[in-house]
Length: 288
Image (cartoon, rainbow, N blue to C red):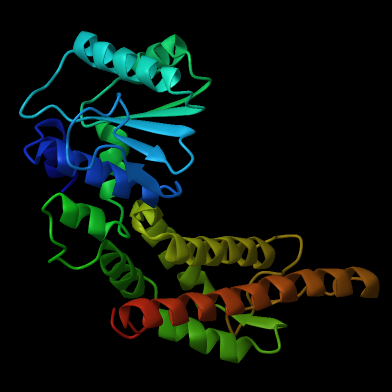
C-alpha cells in the first residue's frame, strides 16, 4: 500500500486543483486549522495555493504531473513560492510536495527561507500519514478505497490468538485478593513477550495505541513485581508464587506495591478488551 501511495504522490495524475484539495485534507489531519484556496477556480494566486483565514499561514503545493524532479528544480519552486509568501507578509510558510527529499535537502531549504517558521512535507511524510489506519479518507482521496480489513483488526486478532485472554481473566479471578498468584502467569508473560517481538503498535490509531501501550506497561510492571527474587520464594508445590515472610512493615509495603501492579493490570486489561470490542467487534475468544 505505502509503495503505491508513494507512486501516486510522485507521479501525480490528478491535476493541480486536486493537489490543493488533498493538501488541505492532509494538513487538516495534522491538526492545522481551516485553510482556504486562494484561487479555487484557477488563475494567479501569488504563490499562495492555500492560506489561513487570517492570511498568516501560507501553503504552497508542488505536485508535478508525471515527473520525478531534481532537487535543483524543487529548490527553484520552493524559493519562488517562499519569496511570494514573504512578500504577502506570511508568518508561516508550508511547502508540500509529492516529490522525495532527503532530510539534508530539507534542512538546506529551510535555512534559505526568509520566513522564520517554515515547514516542508515531502512524499515520505505524506505517505506515512496516508498509510495510517485512521487515514482512510486520505487514501480514498488518492483513489485507494479501504476494501481490506483494518490493520487494527489484524493486530488484535493476532494478539488474542497468541495471548490467552480468557485464561488471563480466569487468573485474575483466582488471584483475588492478590496475595497468591497461580503459575499460569508464567505462560502469560511468555506469550506477551512472543507477541511483542513482532508487534507494530504504530499501525494502531491513537485511541487503541494508547490503550495497548498502557496495557503493555501494566504487564511489564506486574511481571517485574512478582518475578523479583527478593520478594518471592521459588514456586511452591501448587506452582504458585508466595510472598516471602518478611518483617511486618516491609511485607506491608511490598504487598501494597504488588497489589497496585495487579490492580492496574486488571483495569488496563478490561479497558483494552472493552475498547477493541466496541471499535471492531472482536471478542477475546475470537483468537482461539
